[in-house]
Length: 296
Image (tube, rainbow, N blue to C red; front, side, top):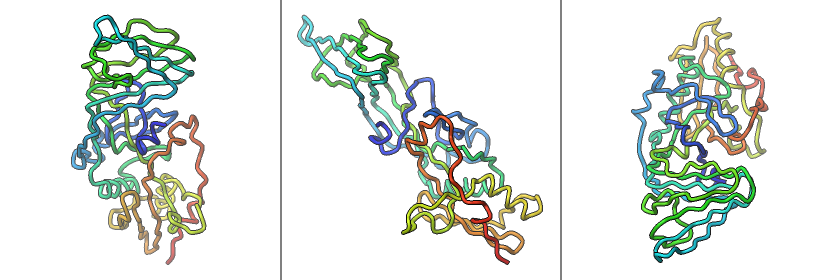
């Protein structure tokens, strides 16, 4: 739900998980198992591509009810948050900014070049983070039981739907019922991130009028096959020609020993279905020789 609401961002959920732009690794059940960071490992100068945008406040909840009862002072209220189902949650943050890749075309082109040449070792399951939301304050409450609740005392309540990350509310937890994960009042967290997964696509597969075609072979298989054609050596930069088609698509041409191969590398945004998979099954793929058709 958060993915759809934000247009493609993955919720980090726990404040101890802090993704950074350029992190790459395997995504399983919504958690990024980072292999490392492209800049920290010397593969890509992420700082060259970085830009910052404003996000401000964010409020979202699922299957909760908030009720308020005015205290004796009039302006003071006691809030009760009731969780209607197991897994219901409240996800609030404020004063946020987005750290993102500004020139994605050039960034993806550089990544494609280094993956194809083997300069950047790349596993088939890897994704890369290209945007992170950083919040000055955040509050996340998650219930493990149906019918759980928390009571909070606050001041100057003007609405029954406040942003629970707002420090001016002076919210304090007074009691709770059930099993509630309480990550309220966290500072400088990274509650959302966006990621893409590079995949090989046969030419013509991206916008085919006949519907979706199978994906191409994995990047690792393509790299291995190209090395076999070259007798085991790596691909030289002069044997690769890359053209950026749009913000997420790079067209590649390999000229190996006088033989040509053309294909596309799509940096597809991670889908919510992919993000929550437990065991990432191998995608339906075309055999590598069906995509890399070398002609004399």
